[in-house]
Image (cartoon, rainbow, N blue to C red; front, side, top):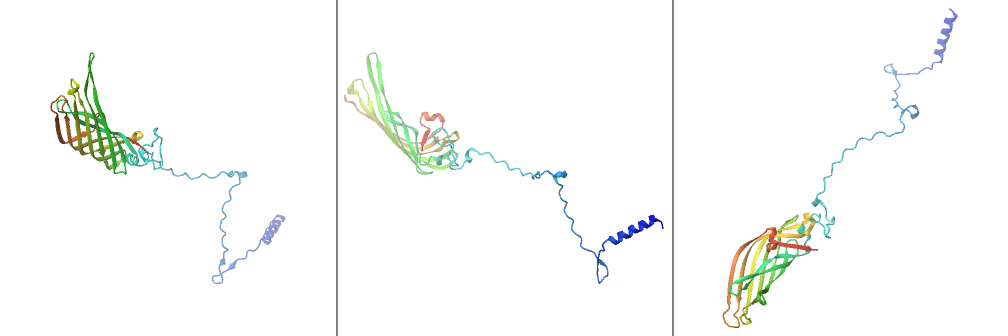
Length: 302
């Protein structure tokens, strides 16, 4: 055996001596070796920053779902308690409260033009002529259904006819009317209300028909009485920011009685009179009818 072979044998023998003996248990029934349980694998440790690992930044967050778009608020979507300045101190339609314009004026006083009454008066021939008496009324809503509407109208007619140095007075007349209505709101929504108005009107007129001399002057007079009802729509201008302003167009049915007469002159002669009654419908509705008394216009003060 060479020295080289001897050295390799000694090295192999020393390795066998230094290896620890691994004791293994034997199953007494089967005689097989019992293997030790396997240790679970340890999770991999993150690489430190100095070895090229992460530098402390947080991981990206998952994307959040998109929020649904909110619908745009409309004029009537506002809730009670919210208001907007309209320039006249009132809030619009309803002043954007969810209420109708009509509901908002309950408890307020509406002042305005409620029509023209034609009051009869006797002329010099004994027939009836008519004096216009524009009626100003007040409408007060006790609740959303019931209101009261008193009104008064006045009218006067007179003058002089002048020719050279001579001036002759023209027949004059004064008329007065009293109006009372009970508006009933059967339906209202938004800027619109449907109403029925039972009403009564009374008027009288008085004046003088002048003659060539004072002894030929004659007194003249007239009486108007009507009772009936109107139905129509009241439109309030909340859509323009002025819900306190309203216009109303109606159709109606009324019984009317008129009487007119002229007295006898002091110089002698007879008087004359005329009486008429009628039952008729009326139509009130064109915007320009406000100038002839067929359209009602009101402004509510609150």
